[in-house]
Image (cartoon, rainbow, N blue to C red; front, top):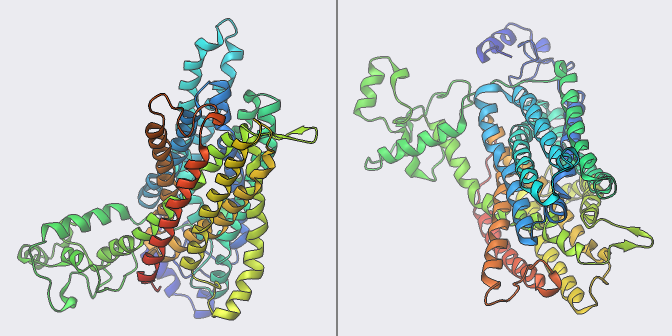
Length: 571
């Protein structure tokens, strides 16, 4: 894996054309650092283990997250607002950390090593969360109320260790899986088109088990056992990842793309008073490959201000004339490819921002939706359904729709549109952004009916439509977004742009936490219980849901405007 790109090119250049076709064309290497053979590495033979690891990590993560709000309210005695806020903030952090994990993977450690270390940290964090449930059993002579602060400390320490661990695992797992398919091979490229669909399908199969079996164990067999199971499962995922080591294809690290992005901004600002040359070929690195190990990106004519980072001034030319380009500070002078990497990110930001609200609504699935269910009749026949298990309808919707979308909708749409994927990623995302509006409206109508009925008499099964609508949104928006960010990313920024999609989930979680806090602060005044009190029968959770539906409509309009203006990157 330490082999250089030049060594790879030299090896392949000396082979006959027929022999060279046996190797990948994207510069990927095998475990020994040699050019990767197509028939021995990559493809689905490698992805089976990657998907197995993903299954285990999703099972473990959701085994904690789905019922966490119940643990916080019933065991640690937190209020509804505090518990919902803590869950949203933690989940947001879990999706924020992948940005740091992506930088570490792309710049220093590589994706595989980053994933292995991250798994170890995640397992340790899950053991800490389990320890918080074991504390009352280990220290029996202390009054339960006195041990709660210690439980909270151990719990949140473990939760944020999990966030750090998943920060390295999440973005790398998706990108590492996509790396197993060679874009230069038409058959492998077509196969990779289904990878993100099946990645999400696999993830939701794991989530289904979490929302049923693990939640049931936590509710009926105790939290100590219920929080230990996820740690064991993630450890199994680590074993699965390591077992297929020799079947993987590896990409070389190419330096931090985020640092290169910052260099473009600094260099452009430093030269803000300098006029751009009329001839763009005079820009630095315009006619050369530019960055070592990074494929060249053609110059574009929009966002021209940032082209100033590639202007050669007198002092830069003196350094170049001295035949010492290595001494030219990248914080003063950037090549065109580096500037274009930055432009790609800037163009995607408005679309990224539109996805944030979707995830603010998605955060309600494990917070206010569960709290609403706790105020309803959870018995179905003689069986009590844990409110957190209602997310099964969300998951089942995804599991059913992913293969239908991939095997039925895409071929049918392809015949009509001529597009390889049936519809564009942006059309798919836009359709998905309409789903939170419908889900929030459904939840609001249900809450209004629940408040008018006798307390705890409305069946929790009436929540099924709002969960199912969020499932439809996940199939359209989440998968479409992952495909969009990975497809639009330059070669050196695949992991970071995948992490950008996860960052939208993080921002949505923080937005949810902010909205919950603001709503309660604004409505719980003058002795009023507010919209989301501890006893929901005294509040107006329906108004919160209607507010979210209205904001969702505005978000959908904003996305449509941005999508029409976006120019897709080709190649």
